[in-house]
Amino acid sequence: MKQRRLIILGQTWTVIYVESLTEGSEAPVYGSTDIDRRIIKIATAVNNTPALLQSTLLHEVIHAVLGIAGVSAMLTERTEEAIVLALESGLSPLVRLK
Image (cartoon, rainbow, N blue to C red; front, side, top):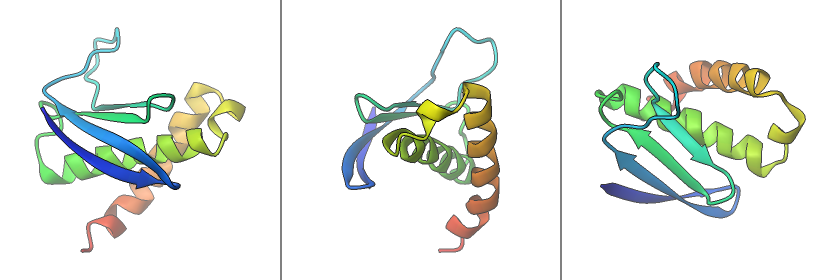
């Protein structure tokens, strides 16, 4: 299990790369964010390219930012996911420009 640390809005977060994630869903789970524990998990089985790994990490970091800022508490889960997906789609090409 590979791990790394990220600083998100001044907080240290742990990113854990695991083989797979399940959250009671039949659909594949690409990543998860635990705001209280400051842990992001990324499933490597479904994120099987560098571009997918990067997009999923960005997606989960956006969830973390919204959670830390208290914005998540003001949104329904569905609305938050829509916002996160829109930001991920718009920002992913910029992040890949390294």
